[in-house]
Image (cartoon, rainbow, N blue to C red; front, side, top):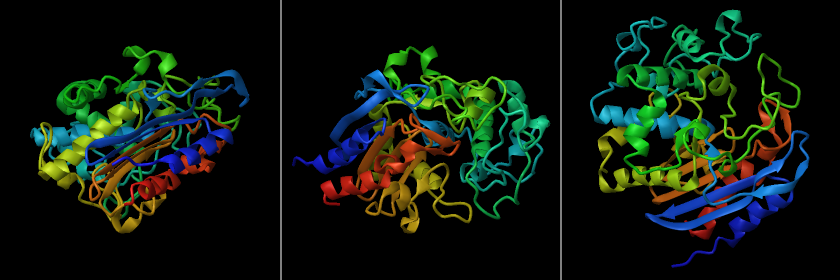
Length: 388
């Protein structure tokens, strides 16, 4: 059966006409790729937010800054593989894993993965005027890692759920300590190489990906002049991770952000999850391990171990109103969304560079105001086209 996605195309193309930078979309249903399309531009605007004379068109194999999708397609996948191999105990206290960790005796990897370990959303290590004080200022990887080990808690572990980059940065340290290798190498060895993913990597410019293939993101990190700190980037960001903590303080490789990938590679990882769920196992994972990671730990049932879960349709703002309660995935600040609807055997990867647009402040870019930048309208229309 051929499906008509014309209404999806019209919605995204309308946003492009009205100023949205660009997007790439891939849809798989029951293991079959039904759609793979590119829209708009890899590079559209200059440092003054004016359209460049010759915008660079988006392509099917454009490489995107995955932002917080790093949390599932690097950290969570690696953690699942480590549990599968008996290398990681999710319930072992961090103090028994990391000799220098003594923040709290009861914090475990499961709590970190589930955003209920006690850490706040983030620490601005990159800013010498950060709210945590000069003690927590670092623009070098090793000092930042030491600071992460003594990052302060903001609430009692398990008492609530707070989405936290800090927790996932710490998970990166845990993984590197256990495996005795860099997170980027661990992810390649355990995930990307076995799945034959050629375009998924940290530090893409150092790993054979030409800058011309990569979608541009924000105009520096000044956020239209509202941010200032040492070494701040002011030029167009392209090929470097947009996230400040990952770029300035972690050298581009971190547990919360830094991964780059393409729609085809991401959909392959989504399909690996589908295979495990529907077939019972894959060459990498067992269903038992996957289901453990999909079990909520804290007080917010929409947070599994790494995965956002559409329990009681509470994540419809990302996954749309028609996605099932068995929908998992994640979003990323730069404009990336992965949706894995296990009930309907549907995988959708929508990668955009929505922050390649006018910046109002650090958390608000013009691209986020478009239907494509909100994700859910596109997801709803895809479900409509598939009669799901």
